[in-house]
Length: 418
Image (cartoon, rainbow, N blue to C red; front, side, top):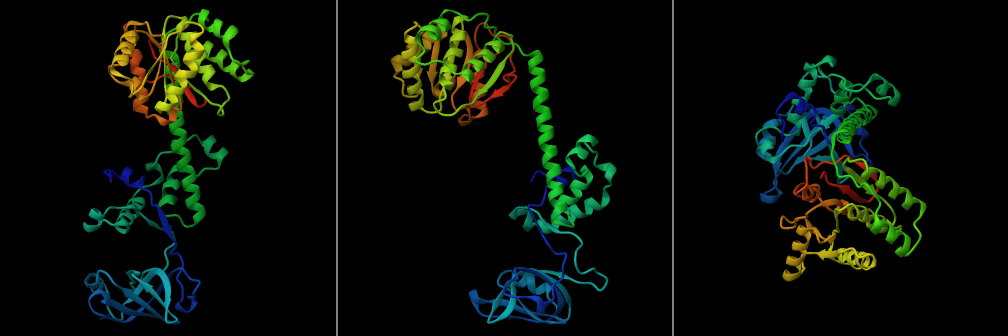
């Protein structure tokens, strides 16, 4: 379970808690009762029935009445725990049979005279494995280990990693209290406060790390520079657009243009409803690359979508003389060979395709920008392989495969570090 250290054990959180802070009287049990905990003396027990119906039936008595306990499994093991006249703490789901309350497969704990009956905390339940259970490390045993560990450590042993101002502003408990209360809370409110604190800590550190990486890449990343808005872009924009661009589309294009002029890697997310014009922004962005002597590629998650893009974009760019080809898993051998050759030699300016475009045999001469339609449907490794296409080009310089990021939405556009 990847628990090697005390820290690992503390980070192995319970998946639920059992409220055993109250001792019920048997007379208080009603048909509406669900889980109950009672303390009493075991009056008697016996093994009854035959074969599949064989079971242990016991009777527990407190000062208000009697409660039947039944076990259908592990009979030999249970029989060793039972002793008539011994006091027990019993917990389980209550049911009624012939009008009498009973618990099937209750949890049993022998009560010593000096033992406090009810626990002063909610009892944690931990996940484990069948193999660990067989070796005596079930959820209860993990709980006892964790309780022993919590008794050994002090607040100074779990250093605070959030600023006091943040704790005060968000009303978060300190780190030591969070660990204590997520394992052994006295109330549900304590547990909820611990979860809130630890969730925020995890998110806070993750966001800090991401922003640190983004900051470093903004400062040190190298990308190609699109120096101009050239003939292809202007021709399409002025003479062949099927509609007037919206204010939002123009704003995004200006932001992309500004990013691509800085010489830094760009990773941009473009978000918009269906039919809002994300594709035309992508087309104009690819033309920025083409105008500056670079190739562009668009990858779609399905062959149908790739074909649709090819038909729409190819028809539009045919008017301005930009070469566009389609590459999918079903592309014929002859056509595939010609496409790959034109791509590697630089004659093909824009490639549209499916996962086929990230195959090793697909080599660009001078890849400048990659566009992934519905990028959430691709894995991180697949997108990284796509970016590597830029690093393998003849003119490429170093790139670690992780661009600096700027997020604005749904289809991702980025330039590899060439």
